[in-house]
Length: 623
Image (cartoon, rainbow, N blue to C red; front, top):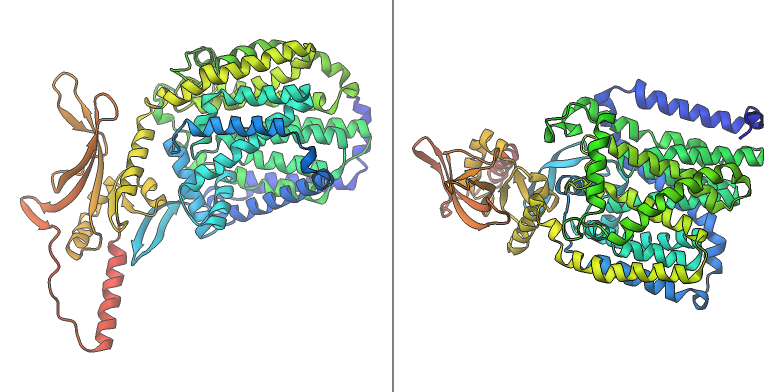
């Protein structure tokens, strides 16, 4: 790029307005609004910011692709390609059980979508109860996770009604959209066979199937990264305002999908500046000028990390004292190698993708270095893949500097998905260098063989999911919910968000102990049909003695009766119990009793007064 070639920027008034909007967003996002006020602001306006950005994105996509969409004819569609996409998506979805795979992330996202659906606010419910047949969320907290996935999930709730399983429906739909975009990317980089190869490489990746059948935002993150790359290719070719608008809003929504995905703003900005320098003019639209203000919730929401030290989850790894450090790189690289080249039975990886991808990476980096000197003469697809590679490299390096960036960890391996996408893009980018049609058909055959010989058996056995006990316990709880004929019971469980998001009254163990008198009130008044308690026991291998997990012990004043239990992992016992009585020392102060006959006053005013008094007290006593 020639620095003198950017003199035209100074004279463009729209660019100055864009910079002014960006400066205002920086001031508001990082300086003007204090921490607590920032969280309150996002909680009450975050939904509407997401709605505005998503509407602008859909509008830009329609105007950018309107001509192509209107020109489509069913008879001219490549039905072979669509059959490969449909078969690959089906393979990814049918061999894994639908459920919440990474417990805290996915349940928090579901809870946030619940508040977005019911109240158009951004809150994760922490207190909710069934009140006379209607489930009411009484209290919530602001979560640290970005808003785009719960926003999309709330739209699905709006269209079909609130159901926790909508999270699986959404990811199921996104699976086929993602594979269609992979095919498109492959076609642009390496032709028709390149599209097939990309789809088949992902069809054999069990980790993708695990996330496709879960309730998390990883698949949406992958889709938005790929969509942004494709829109980079389009803008590099079209160089018009509507293509730029679609690209900018795709990048904005990508930044609102996962925390670290904002790193892709850098290559997008470089690509835009490169196009401007080639055109000797600024290409801007009014939606793009306003875009920085719509990104405002991102820095404001991140104040949570300042207000809550626990948001970094450092307590999960007490041996570390900083979330990011270059000193973590050697250890994380060793874990990454262990992950990518482990047995498919031990980790949800594809040997074919790992081998082809990591062979392609050196060639891809060499390709990038060479093409940087000849960008002006390259195709839009090559220009975009070369510049966008900075995002893939930056994201991988960031994960290697993360204190919990060990890809072979059951909780963390999902964070390898953007790197898996990079491997596929690398293969597709260098594939035309090996132009022989026979070689490309050979790779397609290898990828298809990998799906059948490695991917399907690994997904069917899904042994890699058995080591993550919290996920299995969530599935066990959900089965318990399905088995109950009524939903008017109260659950005491430290994972209360799971029950509340399924519209079951719930409270934590700590709250149950603190508000013992409230539970006495509910037992005496038959407020709930039953009060259940969820607990996990750890088994001493030497003595066989069972001890409660930290935080699960209600104490001696609560009398429990086991109703269901299961050993889901060696040396643990998962149990569901019924609360049968509450004691004060040796005296039993409350237990479920048959309802007694009562005398109802004849005066209607007196009846209404008593009803209001009881209802007010009932609300105060809710857990």
